[in-house]
Length: 111
Length: 111
DNA sequence: TTGTCATATCAAGAACCATTGATATATTGA
DNA sequence: TCAATATATCAATGGTTCTTGATATGACAA
Image 1: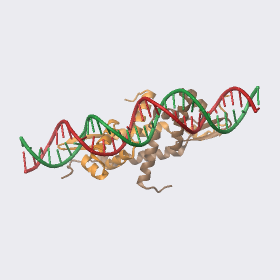
Image 2: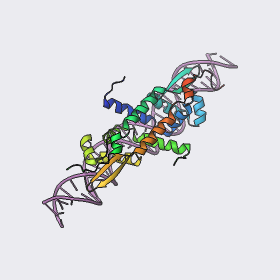
Image 3: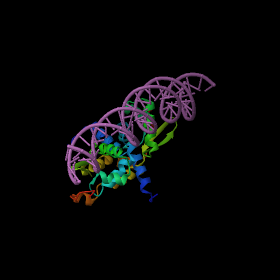
Image 4: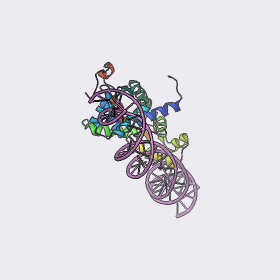
Protein backbone atom coordinates (compact mmCIF):
# COMPACT_ATOMS: atom_id res chain seq x y z
CA UNK A 1 0.00 0.00 0.00
CA UNK A 2 1.52 3.25 -1.13
CA UNK A 3 -0.48 5.54 1.14
CA UNK A 4 0.01 5.31 4.85
CA UNK A 5 -0.38 7.66 7.71
CA UNK A 6 2.76 8.99 9.25
CA UNK A 7 1.89 7.16 12.43
CA UNK A 8 1.58 3.83 10.65
CA UNK A 9 4.86 4.45 8.86
CA UNK A 10 6.59 5.24 12.11
CA UNK A 11 5.13 2.17 13.71
CA UNK A 12 6.28 -0.04 10.89
CA UNK A 13 9.73 1.52 10.82
CA UNK A 14 10.14 1.03 14.57
CA UNK A 15 9.13 -2.60 14.12
CA UNK A 16 11.68 -3.17 11.39
CA UNK A 17 14.44 -1.48 13.34
CA UNK A 18 13.55 -3.49 16.39
CA UNK A 19 13.88 -6.72 14.44
CA UNK A 20 17.39 -5.65 13.45
CA UNK A 21 18.45 -4.42 16.85
CA UNK A 22 19.89 -7.71 18.05
CA UNK A 23 23.28 -9.14 17.16
CA UNK A 24 22.05 -12.70 16.92
CA UNK A 25 19.42 -11.67 14.40
CA UNK A 26 21.90 -9.65 12.37
CA UNK A 27 24.14 -12.71 12.27
CA UNK A 28 21.22 -14.77 11.00
CA UNK A 29 20.50 -12.26 8.27
CA UNK A 30 24.15 -12.45 7.29
CA UNK A 31 23.82 -16.21 6.93
CA UNK A 32 20.82 -15.79 4.67
CA UNK A 33 22.26 -13.11 2.41
CA UNK A 34 23.29 -15.55 -0.29
CA UNK A 35 20.11 -17.56 -0.26
CA UNK A 36 17.88 -19.72 1.82
CA UNK A 37 19.14 -22.09 4.48
CA UNK A 38 17.43 -24.70 6.53
CA UNK A 39 17.23 -24.25 10.27
CA UNK A 40 19.68 -27.08 10.83
CA UNK A 41 22.34 -25.26 8.83
CA UNK A 42 21.72 -22.03 10.68
CA UNK A 43 21.96 -23.86 13.95
CA UNK A 44 25.33 -25.32 13.05
CA UNK A 45 26.69 -21.96 11.95
CA UNK A 46 25.35 -20.11 14.91
CA UNK A 47 26.10 -22.64 17.61
CA UNK A 48 23.10 -21.48 19.62
CA UNK A 49 20.49 -23.45 21.49
CA UNK A 50 17.72 -24.60 19.20
CA UNK A 51 14.92 -22.80 20.97
CA UNK A 52 16.90 -19.62 20.97
CA UNK A 53 17.40 -19.82 17.22
CA UNK A 54 13.74 -20.56 16.76
CA UNK A 55 12.83 -17.54 18.85
CA UNK A 56 14.93 -15.15 16.79
CA UNK A 57 13.72 -16.57 13.50
CA UNK A 58 10.20 -15.96 14.70
CA UNK A 59 10.98 -12.34 15.54
CA UNK A 60 12.42 -11.84 12.07
CA UNK A 61 9.50 -13.58 10.47
CA UNK A 62 6.90 -11.62 12.41
CA UNK A 63 8.61 -8.43 11.25
CA UNK A 64 8.46 -9.63 7.65
CA UNK A 65 12.22 -9.73 7.28
CA UNK A 66 12.38 -13.42 6.51
CA UNK A 67 9.95 -16.00 5.21
CA UNK A 68 9.93 -19.74 5.59
CA UNK A 69 9.09 -22.73 3.49
CA UNK A 70 8.61 -26.24 4.69
CA UNK A 71 10.04 -29.14 2.76
CA UNK A 72 9.64 -32.54 4.31
CA UNK A 73 11.30 -32.55 7.66
CA UNK A 74 13.11 -29.30 7.07
CA UNK A 75 12.16 -25.68 7.13
CA UNK A 76 14.02 -23.25 4.91
CA UNK A 77 14.30 -19.58 5.77
CA UNK A 78 15.12 -16.83 3.31
CA UNK A 79 15.31 -13.06 3.35
CA UNK A 80 12.21 -11.27 2.13
CA UNK A 81 13.53 -8.75 -0.41
CA UNK A 82 10.62 -6.33 0.05
CA UNK A 83 11.54 -5.75 3.66
CA UNK A 84 14.89 -4.38 2.62
CA UNK A 85 13.24 -1.94 0.27
CA UNK A 86 11.02 -0.80 3.10
CA UNK A 87 14.06 -0.48 5.28
CA UNK A 88 15.87 1.68 2.77
CA UNK A 89 12.80 3.87 2.48
CA UNK A 90 12.57 4.18 6.24
CA UNK A 91 16.20 5.24 6.47
CA UNK A 92 15.77 7.73 3.64
CA UNK A 93 12.86 9.28 5.52
CA UNK A 94 15.03 9.89 8.54
CA UNK A 95 18.03 11.44 6.87
CA UNK A 96 18.74 15.09 7.52
CA UNK A 97 17.23 17.23 4.80
CA UNK A 98 19.42 19.18 2.41
CA UNK A 99 18.40 22.32 4.26
CA UNK A 100 19.52 20.92 7.57
CA UNK A 101 22.92 20.08 6.18
CA UNK A 102 23.36 23.56 4.72
CA UNK A 103 21.87 25.72 7.41
CA UNK A 104 23.49 26.33 10.75
CA UNK A 105 20.78 28.02 12.79
CA UNK A 106 22.03 30.90 14.86
CA UNK A 107 18.85 32.47 16.09
CA UNK A 108 17.70 31.51 19.56
CA UNK A 109 14.52 29.79 20.40
CA UNK A 110 11.83 30.46 22.94
CA UNK A 111 12.04 34.22 22.83
CA UNK B 1 37.93 3.97 11.14
CA UNK B 2 37.53 2.12 7.90
CA UNK B 3 38.64 -1.28 9.16
CA UNK B 4 36.51 -3.08 11.69
CA UNK B 5 35.93 -6.64 12.60
CA UNK B 6 32.66 -8.14 11.56
CA UNK B 7 31.72 -8.47 15.21
CA UNK B 8 32.32 -4.79 15.88
CA UNK B 9 30.32 -3.88 12.81
CA UNK B 10 27.45 -6.04 13.94
CA UNK B 11 27.60 -4.59 17.39
CA UNK B 12 27.53 -1.06 16.07
CA UNK B 13 24.71 -1.82 13.64
CA UNK B 14 22.63 -3.38 16.39
CA UNK B 15 23.20 -0.28 18.50
CA UNK B 16 22.08 2.04 15.71
CA UNK B 17 19.01 -0.04 14.99
CA UNK B 18 18.15 -0.16 18.63
CA UNK B 19 18.29 3.63 18.86
CA UNK B 20 15.78 3.76 16.01
CA UNK B 21 13.50 1.04 17.31
CA UNK B 22 11.24 3.31 19.31
CA UNK B 23 8.43 5.48 17.94
CA UNK B 24 9.13 8.38 20.26
CA UNK B 25 12.71 8.52 19.07
CA UNK B 26 11.70 8.30 15.43
CA UNK B 27 9.34 11.21 16.02
CA UNK B 28 12.20 13.20 17.53
CA UNK B 29 14.38 12.50 14.53
CA UNK B 30 11.57 13.70 12.33
CA UNK B 31 11.49 16.96 14.25
CA UNK B 32 15.21 17.41 13.74
CA UNK B 33 15.30 16.62 10.05
CA UNK B 34 15.25 20.26 8.98
CA UNK B 35 17.77 21.46 11.50
CA UNK B 36 18.53 21.78 15.15
CA UNK B 37 15.89 22.47 17.78
CA UNK B 38 16.14 23.28 21.43
CA UNK B 39 14.74 20.84 23.95
CA UNK B 40 11.92 23.23 24.79
CA UNK B 41 10.70 23.20 21.20
CA UNK B 42 10.89 19.43 21.05
CA UNK B 43 8.98 19.21 24.27
CA UNK B 44 6.17 21.38 22.93
CA UNK B 45 5.94 19.39 19.70
CA UNK B 46 6.08 16.07 21.42
CA UNK B 47 3.85 16.82 24.37
CA UNK B 48 5.78 14.34 26.51
CA UNK B 49 6.99 14.60 30.06
CA UNK B 50 10.30 16.40 30.28
CA UNK B 51 12.26 13.53 31.82
CA UNK B 52 10.93 11.19 29.20
CA UNK B 53 12.13 13.47 26.43
CA UNK B 54 15.49 13.80 28.10
CA UNK B 55 15.77 10.05 28.35
CA UNK B 56 15.15 9.49 24.66
CA UNK B 57 17.49 12.27 23.62
CA UNK B 58 20.17 10.61 25.67
CA UNK B 59 19.60 7.27 23.98
CA UNK B 60 19.94 8.95 20.59
CA UNK B 61 23.00 10.84 21.68
CA UNK B 62 24.71 7.78 23.15
CA UNK B 63 24.14 6.03 19.84
CA UNK B 64 25.70 8.94 17.99
CA UNK B 65 22.51 9.75 16.11
CA UNK B 66 22.21 13.27 17.49
CA UNK B 67 24.58 15.75 19.06
CA UNK B 68 23.91 18.62 21.37
CA UNK B 69 25.17 22.13 21.86
CA UNK B 70 24.56 24.31 24.85
CA UNK B 71 23.77 27.96 24.41
CA UNK B 72 22.93 29.89 27.52
CA UNK B 73 19.96 28.34 29.17
CA UNK B 74 19.10 26.21 26.19
CA UNK B 75 20.42 23.02 24.70
CA UNK B 76 20.08 22.48 20.98
CA UNK B 77 19.96 19.03 19.49
CA UNK B 78 20.71 18.21 15.86
CA UNK B 79 21.06 15.09 13.76
CA UNK B 80 24.60 13.83 13.28
CA UNK B 81 24.89 13.30 9.53
CA UNK B 82 27.61 10.66 9.81
CA UNK B 83 25.29 8.35 11.67
CA UNK B 84 22.96 8.25 8.71
CA UNK B 85 25.80 7.28 6.42
CA UNK B 86 26.68 4.47 8.79
CA UNK B 87 23.07 3.45 8.85
CA UNK B 88 22.87 3.27 5.08
CA UNK B 89 26.04 1.19 5.04
CA UNK B 90 24.63 -1.14 7.65
CA UNK B 91 21.46 -1.63 5.65
CA UNK B 92 23.44 -2.21 2.46
CA UNK B 93 25.41 -4.93 4.24
CA UNK B 94 22.24 -6.76 5.11
CA UNK B 95 20.53 -6.73 1.74
CA UNK B 96 20.11 -10.00 -0.09
CA UNK B 97 22.98 -10.50 -2.53
CA UNK B 98 22.35 -10.50 -6.24
CA UNK B 99 22.89 -14.25 -6.18
CA UNK B 100 20.23 -14.73 -3.55
CA UNK B 101 17.73 -12.82 -5.60
CA UNK B 102 18.49 -14.84 -8.73
CA UNK B 103 18.96 -18.32 -7.34
CA UNK B 104 16.17 -20.47 -6.01
CA UNK B 105 17.91 -23.30 -4.21
CA UNK B 106 16.37 -26.66 -4.85
CA UNK B 107 18.87 -29.06 -3.38
CA UNK B 108 18.17 -30.30 0.09
CA UNK B 109 20.33 -29.71 3.08
CA UNK B 110 21.70 -31.97 5.74
CA UNK B 111 22.26 -35.01 3.56
C1' DT C 1 4.05 -48.81 14.75
C1' DT C 2 7.84 -47.30 16.80
C1' DG C 3 11.75 -44.52 17.19
C1' DT C 4 14.27 -40.67 15.65
C1' DC C 5 15.06 -36.27 13.83
C1' DA C 6 13.79 -31.28 12.78
C1' DT C 7 11.45 -27.69 14.45
C1' DA C 8 8.17 -24.98 17.26
C1' DT C 9 6.19 -23.66 21.49
C1' DC C 10 5.87 -23.04 26.39
C1' DA C 11 6.98 -21.67 31.18
C1' DA C 12 10.10 -19.52 34.34
C1' DG C 13 13.56 -16.45 35.33
C1' DA C 14 17.04 -12.87 34.20
C1' DA C 15 18.18 -8.82 31.91
C1' DC C 16 16.92 -4.86 29.82
C1' DC C 17 14.01 -0.75 28.58
C1' DA C 18 10.56 2.93 29.15
C1' DT C 19 7.72 5.85 32.08
C1' DT C 20 6.89 8.68 36.05
C1' DG C 21 7.63 11.81 39.69
C1' DA C 22 11.18 13.89 42.48
C1' DT C 23 15.32 16.21 42.91
C1' DA C 24 19.70 18.40 41.24
C1' DT C 25 22.35 21.83 38.47
C1' DA C 26 23.14 25.71 35.75
C1' DT C 27 21.79 30.04 33.75
C1' DT C 28 19.60 34.15 33.70
C1' DG C 29 16.62 38.26 35.02
C1' DA C 30 14.74 40.92 38.83
C1' DT D 1 21.31 37.64 46.17
C1' DC D 2 16.78 35.40 44.91
C1' DA D 3 13.50 33.28 42.15
C1' DA D 4 12.42 31.31 37.88
C1' DT D 5 13.50 28.60 33.89
C1' DA D 6 15.76 24.85 31.09
C1' DT D 7 17.57 20.62 31.31
C1' DA D 8 19.60 16.37 33.32
C1' DT D 9 19.64 12.69 36.48
C1' DC D 10 17.84 9.46 39.85
C1' DA D 11 14.87 5.88 42.00
C1' DA D 12 10.99 3.09 41.67
C1' DT D 13 7.97 0.55 38.93
C1' DG D 14 5.94 -1.91 35.23
C1' DG D 15 6.58 -3.88 30.77
C1' DT D 16 9.06 -6.18 27.22
C1' DT D 17 12.57 -9.15 25.51
C1' DC D 18 16.03 -12.87 25.81
C1' DT D 19 17.66 -17.21 27.39
C1' DT D 20 17.15 -21.87 29.00
C1' DG D 21 15.32 -26.30 29.58
C1' DA D 22 11.22 -29.05 28.88
C1' DT D 23 7.69 -30.67 26.16
C1' DA D 24 4.89 -31.00 21.84
C1' DT D 25 4.25 -31.93 16.80
C1' DG D 26 4.92 -33.74 12.54
C1' DA D 27 7.71 -36.23 9.03
C1' DC D 28 10.28 -39.87 7.87
C1' DA D 29 12.87 -44.43 8.16
C1' DA D 30 13.31 -48.95 10.09
